[in-house]
Image 1 (tube, rainbow, N blue to C red):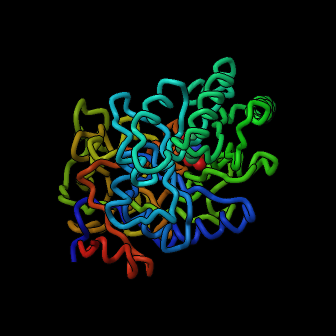
Image 2 (cartoon, protein in one colour):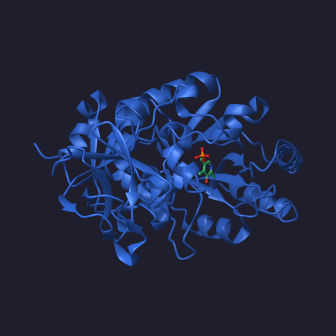
Length: 387
Ligand SMILES: *Cc1c(COP(=O)(O)O)cnc(C)c1O
């Protein structure tokens, strides 16, 4: 049987195992499972349902529309959905009515939220910029934001659920300085009459390595997909499993003579009579052009480099005299079980991080979901049976 042309297999049991492991490590601190960018390319709905089945109570999805997608497939209000990047033209009404948690960075945002409140108070997390200069209020603007939030809360328009910041993960000292700024901001808020019920600061790396940064909740993304960010540490070292395995099937084979130029620009020439195997997976599918000469793919348990340029829809490998047939599975990256590289190794080889590789796996790569977890609500969703 021929393998699918292009496929990303998402092992939901591996995701759940990672989730359970990380929750065990963080206990009693809460874990928010981060699922921005379509769950790091793994597919938002199946990942979210698997996490909910595993008992997760907090999910971070970045945007309100993504949160509403989850409410629409039955993720109930017992699961808090945190969003923090808001379209300046967004009407917050649906988010508030669906009890979506809103990260707030500035007075204008708070104002728009307060104006959209109808039936019930908006759930607000006050963001502090402690050095990353992305979201969150600057330290200078913080007192004014806090006072406005206090007044809106007293008027029953909002509920301040938490305060949060995000760290640069630049160095231990820089992160410690950021956390000190955050702690001072919390004190200031309490002085101004806002009780902050919950604090969250750390993502995967700091959550793992800096116990004192865990506060009430850690926002975990990379670790849950089996892509830990710690330098020189593999997922396996930490007891985490890569969740995504990317494969293609050999689409054509061709016997060619010595000296044959391969792919655009003939950057590779065969040094013997040999067989070229065509792999239907190009840069449109997420293999960067720069992967030539830097990564290897596995076919029948053996590794081969990419021969010549990666094209939009395909690349070639020189398999010599090996018995490689049309339909054979080419493993680009995965767990390593079939002698393939892991996505962490791809990241290192390509001067990037595993997150970028998985997020860029393209839309025409079919996601298939495996594991026992597929039997529950995920299975119903995948079969189109959700309400
Ligand atoms: C992406 C992100 C996270 C998760 O980061 P990981 O390093 O993948 O765990 C947490 N918080 C915020 C605000 C983020 O943008």
